[in-house]
Length: 605
Ligand SMILES: Cc1cc2nc3c(=O)[nH]c(=O)nc-3n(C[C@H](O)[C@H](O)[C@H](O)COP(=O)(O)OP(=O)(O)OC[C@H]3O[C@@H](n4cnc5c(N)ncnc54)[C@H](O)[C@@H]3O)c2cc1C
Image (cartoon, rainbow, N blue to C red):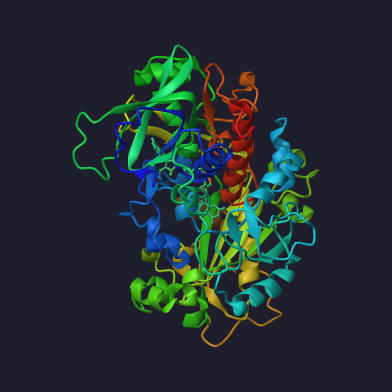
């Protein structure tokens, strides 16, 4: 099998090198190898092989990758930000073969069709992307509109476990604020609706990551001897001959190898180098290689190969808040008993083939936007931005709500047990950040600013103030509701209508009026948001696809401007944000990229 921790000496030169072995990269490598088994491909991934790691294969252990000592995620550190109450954020990102798809929460969520249209790039419209969205999946739900695929590598199903009680209660409660249930909320256009969650989990309960579904089958079938994967190795820089990419320099990842002195090695690429280190990793790789903003490269001591001022700029994510609730759920209704070890060891549960193993606890997702009256209540500046960006796009939500049977955050926050959490992230943020190198080496610090809540007019805060109120009205009308986990909600003044409560005897009366928030309450929410908002792990847009004179870094065929033989394929190319968790877009970019490269390389003729 062509999977190594040390590259065999005879592999000095290949046709195609893929730097990074994450979600998009696995799709690209697999499709290229399948198109022409004679093409020699080398993928170099910084993390370890994902195959056979029980906490990755079995969805219920998804939180383990976020533990601070985890070696399956990378933990990027951001600058302190005044807009975030002087906090530095830690941004986890996939750091293993399969990238984020091997460590993420497995929520199946697709961009709106119009999101791709908004990119404005020939060949990447919603209609152009639909065949790739279908090609990547085998969908196990109902599909009256014909927008899903049935023979792709990734199985999308409900997995082996779900809690009807939470689904029914949440769906009934959401209907009271005007969001009805949709059979398929991932039909690329639905908004102001909620839907029972589908997952990147097979019907028999296994994680559907890109490495397992695309790459490993080819590595083990004996028919692709020229597909090579080097793990636990970091690409330091791309090598150029004049302006043509001709190979890479890499080293063993010190997280896995103890002695790395003098270990830098090179490997040559005859035809193509593809940068695929994710939206946080690819810009640094390009900059270390001499492709980027001239001033930044000069300050970092890297000689210029090609000026590309867009590299590392325009960083975007979605902004996430978690709100846990007191509840009357049973142990079997939430993931807590398993996650906190009360159901026995992972080995025992795997031996029993316990159905809860094939569960990610994300029960229902909603895509929603404010009503006209709610927009007006957010003030004239928000109204102006709304009229510009959202009014004429009724298919665009402003936030995505997911109800979770557990608490997908730091258990040290004392979220209650059993946990019931509403997670909300706002989409299409107005704020932008950047990620740049400060020196030429892999270990030099990055200058990483998320930009969260730093937009003029505080519009992103306003969106989140709306989501706080909306989600709380839904949650407090669920029959299992018994109050808020006060430590994890804004600390409203005791006399305020919005003050958190704890109910001993039962749910709220059905006719309980909606909470009315005062200006002081709004200020409390804003302060809390600045102190608590976090990443949704949806980094994108740091090497945008678009015109060069508008700071685009790659063209419609993913070629980096100013150089030859170098492509980018991952979430960094996304020019405008999407209203979804981002794994699906990363997979679809992989499918589209592979098609482009197969044609350009003349494979499979
Ligand atoms: C904790 C978490 C939860 C998430 N939950 C969901 C979810 O439920 N649903 C959803 O749709 N999306 C989710 N996402 C987002 C989704 O997984 C990502 O958007 C997607 O994986 C990005 O794909 P990518 O190919 O751009 O980058 P990645 O998949 O991140 O791949 C980049 C790869 O490059 C490697 N790399 C970086 N630098 C180097 C280097 N110098 N040399 C070699 N290799 C390098 C990394 O180790 C990584 O494997 C989540 C992400 C995370 C991290």
